[in-house]
Image (tube, rainbow, N blue to C red):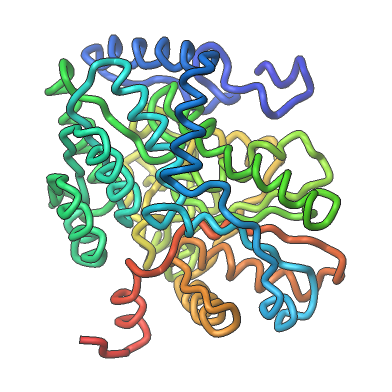
Length: 407
């Protein structure tokens, strides 16, 4: 890895698209020309001032960036330890961090002359963001979504359809994010001429993990500036939830070479990380393998068959993780923990009661870990957590879990 030469965690991936032994490009021959063309287009865009000028204009005037860095005063007082700051990416247009990346990919798609955009989605936020940007630019949009997720994320399904997208329920497997990504890849192989696949997380074949990370790193770049303005220094600890890991990578990446900043990723522990595999904690309870075009940590059996994970959170319900996270785990630059559904629900309710913010179930996992560690840390310790999505989409799921009737 290049980072060994430069003593930096910010130089990957290498020329083969690998972060150490993770990442790479495991795809069919049909897709290779498209992926190589995408890689070349992105390499050109990275040094094109006009591309980034358009991105920053859209981030500012369409998305509403920079998102605020908010001192959660009542939550801090309640926990009685470290100061807790929330990076408010749920205030972005469409209600999550996903649009940061979607804008970049669709600008690349337009450069490549693609008129048809496909995407996978779990919680629906990536689907909503993709449908939104497609509507803005007049592009055809098809969203693959697991049938189970269609049922538990009805508000976002309706939003996507209002925005003109075709939502395709995927009934294979358990009908969740993994299965949606499988069907999106099948579509891409079949429609290579006019179709662009907009992947929503830092997974998939190279260059997707690095490209999505680069677009999402606007989160961490803003936090560095905002934290200096608020506290005159960097945070001591960063915390973010992880499914595939794009919101976390976006927060973490600009801090990877700041050795005094602790980095914690929070996986979905479901009903508990044990042999029953009723969780989606790939780093905590999985092992390396290949899925969706890259080598990373996966939930799998002894024969290498991918297992069906479980989480109350549709956005974290994925049996793998982005390859850069796998590498950060192996190099011990970042620490990864698991939070159960019950703990996430408790954090969801506490955030509502103490801060008047209804979080998505995804960042509720991150907040649950903040609740565990903050009380034992000194009062001058600063935690920054990424509030990567708002909770409108999860109201029915939470009500059902809490035994409340809102019909």
